[in-house]
Every structure is written in structure tokens, then in C-alpha cells.
Image (cartoon, rainbow, N blue to C red):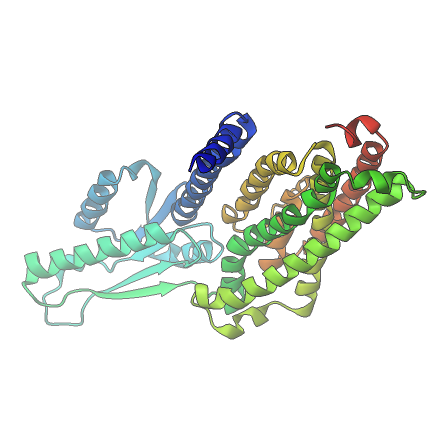
Length: 392
């Protein structure tokens, strides 16, 4: 029993006397989960609501205006509401705006809607929206319209049916809908699996060998240090890529069930789209492995390497979450020279069928291979440094 207590105390002391372990074990995991879930929650809200909800109304009844004004005031969203009253001859132009995602909702009331006598045909109200845009505000205004219908029924005609509400929406192809859904989730998952794959084998390959003193055997062989650097990065990249491809296939197989899509929905992506995705994965894994290799070479032990890499992994995940904020790829070409972010935006562009995707992918691949050359050079210099490679 005494020995058990001694071992227990030794392990507890080892953790609490190492600031890096305290950070890695007790602070980073909770902080990581908090940040990720906060960003996901904010992203969902932003995608649903947007900055300003633009509502166009034809023949707007005063009672309906009161209903939605009170509702939005209670939610503290009134300052995000832009309601304009338009004429009948402007309906088609506003429908076109909604089709182009430049406007949110069009509600078309008939003239003298509250003069219905309950005998003739029920008044027709057209509610036009785009299902890709601001789902939350669209659902709220549908609720306000139903509340107005209840008011008309109860206050004006008892239980008599009143409005005939025709909910219409922009025609969106299955290709667009699947692409939009996939682009918000898949880039984040792919980048996470790419990094986790490299993180699981990279530190062991370099920092682990330093810790076991087996790296010294390689360094005294006639092989050039640059060849050693390239061989390390290449082998780690291939292994990580296989891991990522396996994860990618698993994601593709599970997403239709997860998102309630038809199994054939993934056929909206062509063979060329999948080739472009593989090009992005192939070039990005070199960047990730290069970063992991440099950090591992700098670290004195496997534990230290893992400690250093964890914050970089968190930053990578945060960057990959940007796919949830955008409805399409970033049009700024400079963005495709930024490591990791360029891969995320290229994947978004592929899945949203961007017209300029060939340019985006080309810049991304060239930038990533340029980073690879830089990382190989840095790793080569580190392998040539006795202070770094034999630092204990």
C-alpha cells in the first residue's frame, strides 16, 4: 500500500510541477471545447439570421405590422429588421433579388384583406423566400403570418377559415443544396483529420527518436541531412494522407445519413471535383507535416513535442471553422497563399461549384509546395545543428 501511495504521489507531483502538462491536461481541453462550440453556435446563428433581414411587403395591414414589430422587439432584433412597402408592379423585381440572395422575404397581401366577408374565395397571401438564406427569420415571419391569420379568424370571423397562405420559395437544385451543406462541414472535418493524422505519427518519428537517442545513429550515417529531412516529411505525409483519405471516405459515407440526404446526393460532385479535392489534401498534408516535423525536431522529448503541437492544432481547427461562416469561397486571391486557410477556402469553392475554382486550387497547390520547400530547408538546418538535435 505504501508503494502504491509513493508511485501515486510521484505521478501527481510530476504533473503539477510541470507547467506545460498543467496547461495541456487541465486548461487547453476545456478551453478548446468552449471555443469550438462557441464558434459553431455563433456560426449557426449568423448563417440563420444574417446582419439585416430585408422584408418587402405589398399592401401591408397595420395589424400584421404590429404583430411582427412586437415579436422582434421581444427578441431584441428590431434594429436588424428592414421592412419596405412596395407596389404590385415591383413584385417580380424583388423575387429576382431573393433568387440572387440579395433580399430575404417578400410577402404579398391582397388589397382590403380585412374586408373579407367569409363567403367568397379566401384571400390569397404569397410568402416568397430563399431556403438558403436566413432560415431563422423566415420561420419567424411565417409564424407572424400565422398569428395574423388567427387574429383575422377569431376577431373578425370567429372560427371561419380566413387566409389562403401560399408559401413559395426559390427553386434550388439538389446540386446547390448538397454543395452548400457539404461546404459548411466537410472542410472543417477534413482539415481536422489531416492534422490529427500527422500529429499522431509526426512527434514519435522525430522527437521520439531524439528521446531514445536513435536519431543520432541516422545523423552519423553518410546520408545528407537534406535527404533525411525530405525522407522524413515525405514518409510522414504519405502515411498521414492515407489516414486522411480513409477519414474522408468515412465522412462522405456517413454525411448523407447525418444530414438526412439521399445516398445518391454525393453524385452531384463530378470526377474532376474529387481530383481537385485530392490535390488539395495532397498539397496541404505537406504543409501540416512540415510544421509538425519542425516542432518535433525542436522539442527535446515526445511529451514536449505534443505539448507544443497542441496549440497549433487548436489554431488549425479554428481556421477550418471559417467554412461555416461563408456561403462561398473567398474571392480574394491573396487568401489562397495563406497556409491551411487556403485549403479550407479551396474546398469550399469546390463544393459550392465556384466558377474560379481552377485558379483557387492552382494558387493553393503552388503556395503549399512553396511552403514545403521552406520547411524542408528549415528542417535541414535543424538536423545540421548539434545543439538542437542533441539538446536534452
